[in-house]
Image (tube, rainbow, N blue to C red; front, side):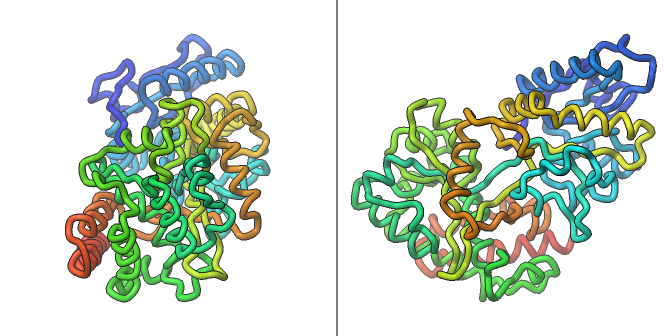
Length: 424
């Protein structure tokens, strides 16, 4: 999702200059050097963050300069990385290990570290068990569903253990007159299929012929291993499991249908629940884990970094920066951040029992228990940077060209994009 650019109190040029960063707090709070914090947040969320940081300044006497480059965040960060002049604290927006690790301080010894939810740990911990960010929230990219639609069709979530089970559920839903899966591809949402389906076939720990290494080192055989993925989606399309206006509808139309129970499922972020509830506060919604490819496999949930803050390893105010993270991890503050972001708290001591999505996640955990695998977002972990649009294009080929030709075009498109971007 693109964030509209907002520069708070600074010009576009000043974004790149840390000393001119926008300040969210009173400069009279302390004569000591300020903490520079760079965030992806804009608009109302940025207002919330500034209020939180003003309270921190009042309590600690430490000023925090807030820089918000909006949709130029990655560009600004790349410039800062190249000059080896990073913000003291910054959001890693999904890339704490693969992009920012060499610039970050390990944080395992922090007091809040013991409270990090097990579900997010695999995403933010390297092979040496080092954790480089404080995860205030975590994002879930999976399948959301309407419980009432499932009940009407006689579908039991606990019985959906494999993709064959999933297909059988779609058939039951279709017979009831409910659209099984809604995709609004006007927004490029076919790419959302990639976060749920390929991992279960290729990279999850429970996959026998695991292709994680091959995807990362460039030896992956697309014809052999990606073809079954495209074929399964093509088969669902042939059977009428998707909305007929998939190519022209947007995601907003999907969440409305989901809220009304006219469509049963949507692939994508759990924020689809929040959006659906805005249209129908009484909607009965849940989180469905991705089924396994085979009977002995595990269901899975794709977890990503939500609001995660790291500390620059060369910061000359590192102690102050770490104290700021400690403040952001407190129950009250972390709860406010989770509410503002629409994500799920990533710290187990942050109780948010009234939050709809937290309840939905807890329910899914209870349903699948030890048969649930927590996995990183597929495109971030296993594909070269910048392939989201390529995933959209690849899967769209299946819907614009039916049958074997569409399957072959889909595989060829993703292979070509992968090869080109891997070589860069």
